[in-house]
Structures are given as structure tokens and as C-alpha cells.
Length: 216
Image (tube, rainbow, N blue to C red; front, side):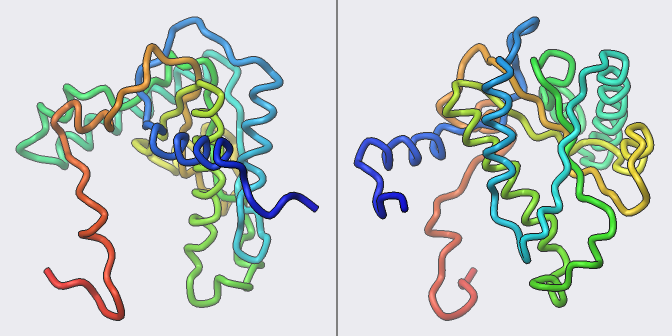
């Protein structure tokens, strides 16, 4: 059985990875990720908690360059549609770099598996817990990547039905993320959207209440 407590250095490393994790969009072109590192990252993802131990996540590694470009085309098409939906900030949004699909060393698509209705434990009243579980797996991978000195970005700008068809997913399987992974030029000290003046994080105090819904 493992020791019940982490050392001060171990504990600090965990909190550092959490604090320094960033949603990365800029990667070093032509870079690679060592196979043993990739294995550790996937193992970290698979160690995530899941409701009813359903493990709904599926990771598809994209190694075909034509397929990567097809995925990029889907993302870019939705990027323009999102800009139109945003309205008055459309041009500002389109100026943002929102993905690194063509530049990253490794590209993954994460999906929820088919036949999820078979899992009832923990999902009878909250069926979305399958998505929550898969999100925990992605976060595990994200934090492990930061500890390995790698950047990762979660791209959610795509048509899920078309991506599922492109990858030959069965009925009921739903893609939820395109993950860009690899070495990055630098890790910014603030969220990228803050640096781009798109949005700004709010303090924790605005999100914590006691015994009832927060006022305001």
C-alpha cells in the first residue's frame, strides 16, 4: 500500500501542473513525442475516475496526414460558422488562433463509446456523467502532458456528426474533443484568451457559496 501522504515536493509538483496547464494552440512544427511518453500520457488518461466504472472514453490517434488535413478542414469550416454566430465580435474571433491541428506532434480524437445506455449506475438521473467521466480522462492527460513539458489543446470547434462519419464511428459513439499535443514554443503565464483580450478569468470567490445559490 502506498504512503498516505505526498512529500512537500510531490504535492507542490501536482499543484504546479494544475496552475501552469494551458490550452495550447501554438506548437513546434516537425516535433515528435517519444513513444514511452505517449504511453504514459494515455495511461494517465485511462486512470481517470468514471461513474459506475463505465470508462466511456475512446482515444483515436490520428497518424494519417490526409486524415489530419480532413479534420483540420472540418475545424476551419466550423470556425467560420462560429464567427458568424458570435455576431459583432466575428472579426475579432476569426483573428484568434483557436487550434494547432496541422502543427502539433500528435493528434487525437476523443469520443464517447456507443451503447452507453447500458450503464445506469450513477447515470439514471444524470446521464451526462459519461461526458464528465471522459472529461476527467482528458484533464488527466492534460496535466500529465504539462508535467512532461508538453502542451495540449482541446479543440471543440467541429461538427460531431461529420467527424464521427470521417472516422467510421458506430452509431451512438460521439466525438467530444480533438486534442493537439506536442512540444510548444513556450507556456504563457496566463490563459491564452486573456493574452488575446478575448475573455478574462474571474476570481474563485465569485463561484463558491455556502448552503444556497450565490447572490448576484
